[in-house]
Length: 136
Image 1 (spheres, rainbow, N blue to C red):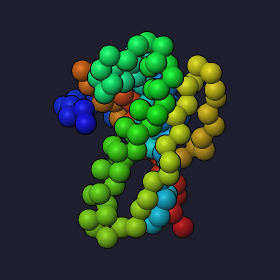
Image 2: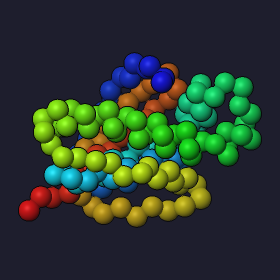
Image 3: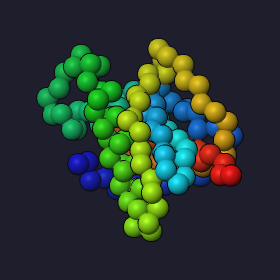
């Protein structure tokens, strides 16, 4: 789709997968392991991604369409990442992505041990927070 080379930046351990930027893509992980993956980015990064995937789109149309575009992008990235687990006979699935405009809405996520990654692309920074629920 975008065929980008990403550069991994800072990796941190956090208490929550809460997003740090204006637009968040929230995807639940279900199955043998449960948790939440949250991608977040600023609106400029979102605009650049949408304009790359939908050449010629106007700024007004970006505001209408970005949730569908970045939600599907998050779904594909997470699905591809889960293939590693599926190859090891782990039963995992993802929920439908929820795109939240943090400028207009709040998001409440449970505290859980979270791995935070910063990924740098030609379009801008993408923050990835992976929160895994404790297993019994």
